[in-house]
Length: 254
Image (cartoon, rainbow, N blue to C red; front, side):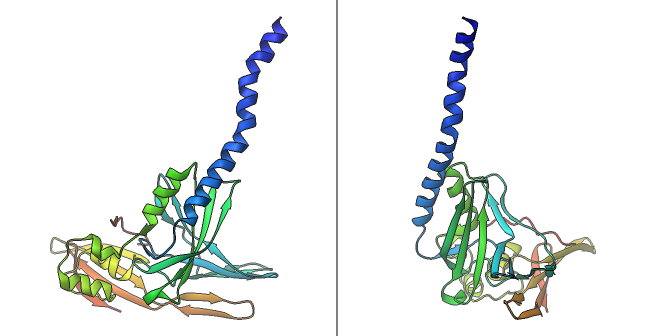
């Protein structure tokens, strides 16, 4: 009697455990289906640096930008060039905020419920490439939240009620004196480095924007040091000077 009760009590648990892999497969199938529907051109809401490397079997791209349903976009810190006895990789940046892109390839990882997406630039960004990873995906809603955090269906300047000359400058990747930080991010991307100070009671913030690609790693070749920089000085949140600590500012784009 006691053994029979225990067997009956374990049946729901056994059924749940048996269903778990099926649920994971269903989530992956639904997410891959939703991914296939993301055709056409989208616009990045983030810079898209990645690690391009080589090993004994060829070259690879490794994402350092991840997106989760809860935390949104996160960019990991990496060395400019790193490696070991059997591989080497360098940090490269060819796609930035507001660049038009389309999906090239994608791969679902059921073990950690993640989706890796390779992108290629179109239009003014036609030579750009990059890779991004969505993590913590329990279902299609999580996937859509990640997609919304990383991409826009229209150029970002079209989402804002900005003056026509500002929108034109942003579309042409130009920074003008008097621009806000949000406008600068849409125009040239997030900064690599920032520093803050005060000057006669005014808040001063300096951004260093990467303009070059950075390192480029091929199977037989390596190019290091192509990391041109642009310095922008803000006073009380507006651009005061444009010239040629390590924390990304918290500017949330529409």
